[in-house]
Image 1: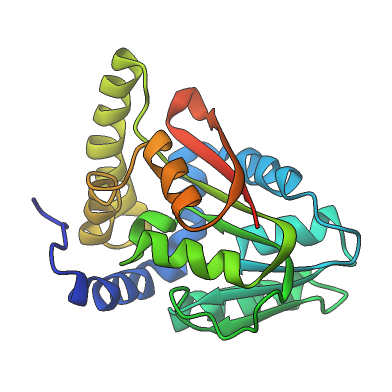
Image 2 (image 1 turned 180 degrees about the vertical axis):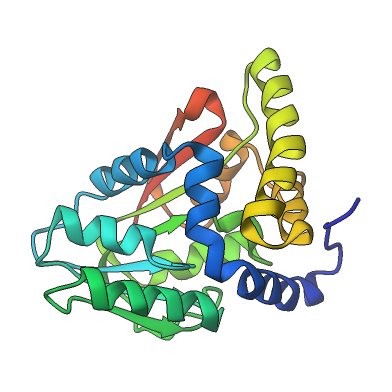
Length: 239
């Protein structure tokens, strides 16, 4: 299938190059493809995090910083570190910070989320948005997220999932595998990338399966809620 990467060793490099190519138009494409509803999903994710006032949060695979800036709008006293391994995405995030982060509370680090450059128990919360299905090792990434959290802190993951309702699943398939590559290719600047992004869901666990992987990584009190007619899953786990 076009856009699929079957070799785990090559997936990281492929994903990095792909996101580097679409970075300049990434935010615009996201808003268009979701009619802006993705912003409401991110607000819900931030609300579920429930960090202490002025705490320290890490956003994994931060991209251009969408979740980072949602976090800071909720609590300007937070210190938020965004981690991503794609330099052009980080360039976009830093440019946004220059415009939006008046308090200088956001910082960005180039790094691999499967090997985070932080000590154990460094953060009061962690987030990840629309990226977990792109990593090489899902459980390994979840273990790293848990490792850097203080006991009792939450990790919130927001991502696309397979709808449970058969009719919705059929309609979602038409949209995700048909319209997204077409419109994303035109607006986002890379047809190849917007073919890969839907196909990345094919081998990704469904919502129940991802909850099991949260537990396998050591999270407790794992739960999830479906959004977007069941096509989006918001998972929460406690370290």
